[in-house]
Length: 328
Image (cartoon, rainbow, N blue to C red; front, side, top):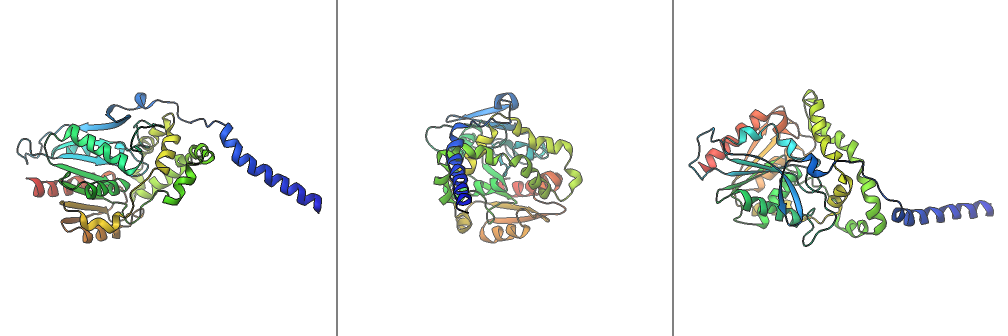
């Protein structure tokens, strides 16, 4: 029995040593092999980061706005997504304003930086700087409307609260405000330990499979979840270092408490949700609408968490009605 106990303690000690030491000496090899420049298209430089953008020029298809009064429509995707999630509506939305979609740090084809000067680009304040830069680059004195989906909706609303007067309108699509994600603040110092920081990219690499589970839950009509859609969502996983970028996003600092500050939003706001969203409960949209004084609520039928993909015509119609009534 004493021998068994000594062996068990020896194995435990060896395990602890391995946990502490091995992450420091075993390099992690990314599964991605493509550089972000090879994979992406247009980029905007923000501080030391290349941000991938997808744009559509204003076509004036609706003939709704005076020259120079058409809005800049800035599209902000949700967790695990990219500019790809706006593909079904960008051309149509360009009839009402210039459209700019971008990939948030850690997602899509935006550069995966591992060092930076100033604000952490993966955190809330770093994301604010990206939004500032895009507005400065594209707005040219026109009204600015932020359209945020899911976690992108939380970021958009946080930006408007923190920057009064900077934005003229807000569209929150299945916004993850009451069901926010991210790491608890107390875990951030733990994640910065060398062992965790080395293991982190390996730990988050499971998003390659778990992300597909979330994608399936996001669609009400599974027949619309085609091979091309899967491929579009998987494409950023081909980038070299995508795991490190996602780890940096996971441990980045975030501003909490938005749900308690929704009443501070003082811009016209459109709240959109799918009638069958199980990722962010449809009822959350009503709570957001009730909390924002200048808001309207549209519930899109036969749609889950991604109404802009499942019901693009209804989505564009809702934005058209709101944009014209708000800015004409």
